[in-house]
Amino acid sequence: MQYRTLGRSGAVVSTQALGTMTFGAEADEATSGQIMTTYVEAGGTFFDTADVYSAGVSEEIISRWLAAHPTDAAQVVLATKGRFPMGEGPNDVGLSRRHLRTALEDSLRRLGVDHVDLYQVHAWDALTPLDETLGFLDDAVRAGKISYYGFSNYLGWQVTKAVHVAAAHGWSAPVTLQPQYNLLVRDIEHEVVPACLDAGIGLLPWSPLAGGWLSGKYERDVPPTGSTRLGENPTRGMEAWEARNADERTWRVIDAVGEVAGAHGASMSQVALAWLAAQPAVTSVILGARTVEQLTDNMGAADLELTPDQLDRLTEVSAPRVDDYPYGTAGVQQRHRPVTGGRG
Image 1 (spheres, helix red, strand yellow):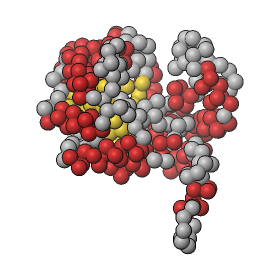
Image 2: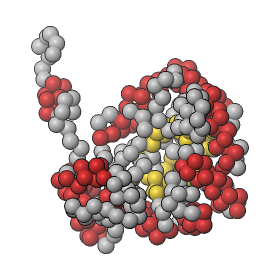
Image 3: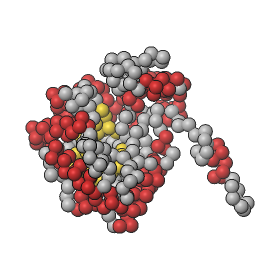
Image 4: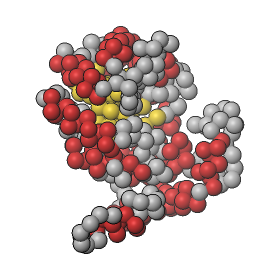
């Protein structure tokens, strides 16, 4: 396992984080415990959870494991999130001081700790003033209830605005952003990645295998069945599956990942994860596993070193589409045309 600082902070985390959304849902407590033990024994140090994962059960499972493994627990960097509803009241959702105070206290109680290392707001809240949210997070840092804070699913302008609002007030700065990012979903490179690089914010990509597509588990024109990220219900998510299946880019990327995997004698998952860990601003890639076997295979990516040519090949074949203004050809011409006066 390799290690990097957590964004601009001085805290150090493993380059593979353990995502725990499966705990209490796709993985029962015994399996979840085995997953945590296997991860830590391999050198992993970064647990990522959220209050809404299995309606709080994920945090409770982690709490019992930490209590039973105090030596290992001392090395764990613990992260959780708040924003989405855990109740039915009008104030049981969002990024207001009222809701975040309750959400954080409830997470600390379920986790059995008096503080978390990283507290992440799970998504943007257009109804709550940004300074209210950031003021609460700064207060939580000063109170010792969280060491650092970060965002999840923010756009580039939202990240940049938050950074500047925090700086203007002299508040603690955000250190991380958790976005969806993988070889099939690279649109954050247009705005989000540059914003994070500019601010020194570390990326914690979720869905690094694109819901299993980059593991090689799906075949062209063969609808998935059984235990998959689409669930046991064969109609759940099928529109998204059909769109991705019909997209030739999907299969070009999968073929390229398979070729590189064959050259290394590695799994396709390991190749996709190794590519992602090598991208600018990435601090730690979040691994989500239902079984110990899945986790063990994914962790093998930490020791896989892709050649520059292989990284370039994967980057080129998976390049995000930039046909539309302002990112495509028209946008490039507009940005580089001589200025002769006037506008437009």
